[in-house]
Structure formats: C-alpha cells, structure tokens
Image (tube, one colour):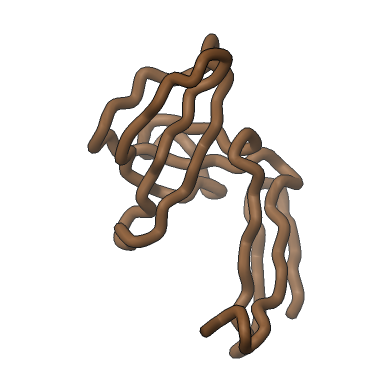
Length: 107
C-alpha cells in the first residue's frame, strides 16, 4: 500500500487490499455541496443534534446511504444545515489515518 498527499488530495494505491480510513469527528468541516474543493467527500445530512457546547451531524455518504459519518462541530461554528441538505465533508489536513483491514476485520 502506498499513499501520497499532494496539497488537499490524498492518492491511495492499495492493490487488492482493503483499507479503513479513520478521521476524528471534530476534524471534519461541513460546507455546502460544491464548496469543499477536490478533497471533499459528498454527503447528505441525515440529522443534527445540539449537545450543549457542540453539534453532532450524521451525514450519509452520497451514493452510499449505508455509510454514515459523524461530524462534531463547536456550537458557535455549527453551520445551519438541516436534514436532506447536500454537503461536502472536508477533513482537516493530516487528519486522515489509513489502516489495512485484515481478513477477520473485513468479515
């Protein structure tokens, strides 16, 4: 497996090996669809919950409704997105961690 980070774009070559991406929920920004640039992951807001000092957004990945990403944003900076809003998820630079998936984990 090889990775190369070029500015805002992460190129990943794994051959036929599965990988798992890990990003802390507070290291992802939500912006309007199309505003996230080349590093953006398109999604659709499922729901948002205000939890005191921060808001949690549950976002379905576009085209993959079974994949849900949790985004945690400080309350004063939380964008006004509602359910079914199309958004871009933009991870902070250096926030993406890549782990190989073993046969046992893939099952």
